[in-house]
Length: 630
Image (tube, rainbow, N blue to C red; front, top):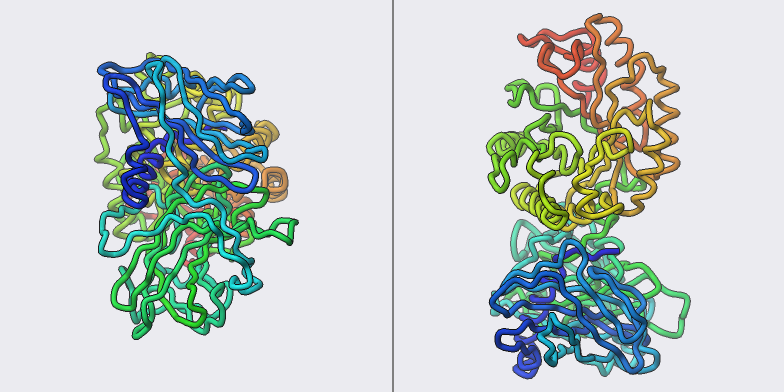
């Protein structure tokens, strides 16, 4: 499985902070050769029997590097998993570029990674050689995140366990104001603005407090502690194994409390070995104060035999009270996390469904929010509309949609990132490497401009025989759908990522199910276009939706529903058959109708009101039974 290319920026942050925290020696360990590329071996983390490491190739030459290959070997360690490179050999090892990272511009770098077994030794730091390294000796960098500490589980006092002898990366204090929250921060409610969502305790009492806060209107306060292991917890969901995360939270002691040590600990789910406490990893430690907010910040790499559970903010003094605010976590967002589970999990409390619609002839009508509480661009947000000329964006129509949505507090669904139709014509004339780079650039730039996008039709109509994106397959190979979803997750970590397809309730039903199941945890939800349901009974529609849910197990969005018929009664009867099924189904999260103004929809007769606002019977029925009752 390929790891996102953003890992090289994470490594750069690691190196920068390592130099600032552990002194000049770490800085001196990072060497480059004048006029030669520098190959650096970095141990991200290690534990009792394993490690995660990466190799960075930085182009310090005067010309781009095109295609690269490096070599290294171990005395005892062996590799067990890899990402972002083609690997060969069983020790020594060779790694070469994959399609999208073979070109390294001057001054830029590429990072690939792997997980390994220590085989009774320490995590080795071998020399990396090869033409990409100028044939010279490469240096290594010590692990920047602390090895796992031996700390007690939350059910017993930590003081009963001997402290770890391993070093811990300490945090920055508030006086070191250089820390920047990662752009891909996917922590949900880290600022405690939405009640105590994702906040809890191992023991003690947690409350949302407005008495003190670092930003916004509130913070989380823990009181009633009776042990050093009593702490605030923050849930992020099950993190991606082998991925490194930049984790930070600001803390402040309750008024009048003497300075005391606080720490940030990562906790995996309990494993089967009750004699060890390898589920705990200390991420950062700092001396907290009651007079100013202090930053706890460090790096955590998810690994081990059990899934991630939560982060714990705890204090060595067993009885003090303290605040926490502005929790953030940057890195490869999980396909299903607490943030996504709060968005998409079927086990979460049911949220009121939306009834949305699309723009009308490229504009948002003034009556839109009279009827609808979710908006999707019909054509304006498609890649071919936004970037008809390579590297020339026309954001203006999409900007207007987002401005309207924000002003009226309704969610936007992006439609669509990658589709075989309505994509830029120039994309078909590029090499595979350039195509891959352009796809990533498009997704990155969209997400950077509209980070509050609620939902995204990431891949559209990919079932064979529909309109799959041949250019994306050329760029990324047969796993192109997974790669596109990985990029969407990387750059839009807080959005619900949807696999959308054409009329999968009625046609190519089983083919769509097979495609969706093959994507595993890469997708958050599925989109069911519903343009051609006329004549289907309520039972037939329900059976199809039930079947998709039972086999795929992902939340469902009715993404494009309409009934095209100039006969008012035919349209009404079909709405009366289908819409209650959508609305009452526990796994359908929302319904988007595809156009509502007669004569302005893509299917003749599918409009619900006349241009002057006069409703057709189906619209009157919707207003009386659903829209006006939301």
